[in-house]
Image (cartoon, rainbow, N blue to C red; front, side, top):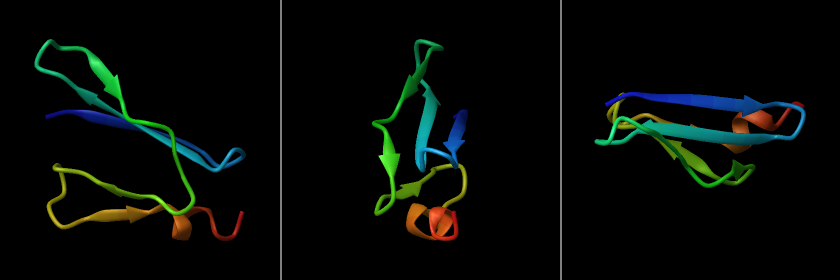
Length: 56
């Protein structure tokens, strides 16, 4: 599985693109403060966007 993340500190938004079986990157919904981002690449890891954007 492959994915890439786009974080916009200015807008306090986050997009996660995941490579599908059709070899196309598919975006998540637009995430922001209050959302938590899991990833199968790091089992047990969750990125808390509240923490990421709290000092911006």
